[in-house]
Length: 387
Image (cartoon, rainbow, N blue to C red; front, side, top):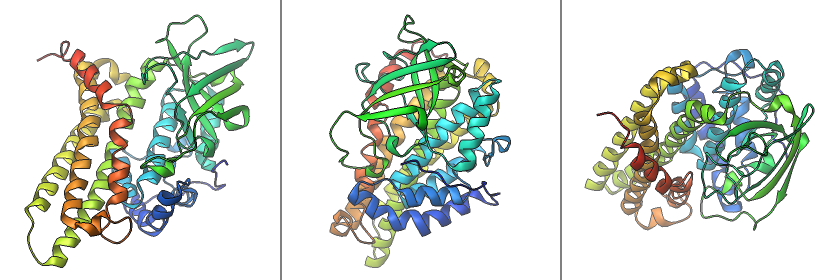
C-alpha cells in the first residue's frame, strides 16, 4: 500500500515536544503489535505526518517543516523512545527527501514532485543496496538506460525498507550501461511507474520488524528528468551518509534511553542503589556527546552543501563512520545493562520493565551499513588524515 495522508503540513511550535506526545500516545501504543506481527506501523506514520513531522528535513518552500539538525535529532530520540521501527522509518524517509531537496538542481519538475510528496505524506524509500556488490553503498551493477526522455532501471536489492508501503523510491545505479561501477546517479521513481517483485523469504527478522525490509527486484521507467543532476558521490558525501548516521544514531540513543528509564524504575521499586545504573548513565552521556559533536561539525554543510568542498575530507568521513560504529555498539551496551538491572522482568517479552524488543531492535544497528566495512574504510582514511 502507499502511505499517504492528504493534508497540508501544520506549523510546528515545539517539534520535540510534539514528537514526545506522538510517541507516547500513538507509537508506544502500537509498538508491541508492530513487533509481534512484523507489520508496517501505518498508524504511527500517519500520526507523525498529522503532527507535521514527516517533512521535518525539508524546507518550507517545499511544504516541509524545515527543522534544524538539532531539532531533527531531538525528534528522532523521542520517536525512538516510543517505537524503534517507526522511528527508523521516519529517519530513513528524512534522509531520502533531504537528498532530493538538496540535490535536485534547477529541476522544477523534481521540486514540484517533492512538494507533492511532502504535502501528501508520501513515504520515499531508499534502494541503495544491491545483490552482488558486497554491501558497498558506492558501487552499482544496475545501470540507467535512456530512451529519449525516458529512463529505465532494473535492480536486485537484498533489502528495501518499507518498500511495499512507499509511494516513491530513491534508487542508486550506474550513470549508464558503459559507466564504471562507482560512477553512480540517484533516480527518483514514483511507485506508480515502478514494480517491486519479491525475491526472497518472507519478512521475519529478530528485530526492527516493523521496517518491513525484504528483498525485491525493482523495475521502473521514469522521466529522464528524475535522474538527479548531482553525481551520487556528491549526494552521499554531502547528505546521505552524514544525515543518515546522525539520525540513525539519534534513534538508537532514544531506544537505549527508554531502556535506561525502565532500569531506573526497577531500581526505584527495589529501593536500593545499583552501580550498573551509573554505568549505563555514563555510557548514554558519552553517546550523546559524540552525537552532539558530529551534529556541530556537520551543521555548516547541512546549511550549505557546497561547504563540503572546504569542510569535508578524511577526518570528517572518519567521524561519521565512528559515530555509527560507536553508537550502534554503545546503545546495545546500555540496554544490556538495563536488562541485567531489570532481571527477568526485563527479559520478558511484555511488561513495563521489558527491554527485550529494545535489545532485539538495536542488534540490527551494527548491520545497517556493516560496522566492519566502516572500520575498514577508516583504517585506510587514517593514512590520509592530517594530524
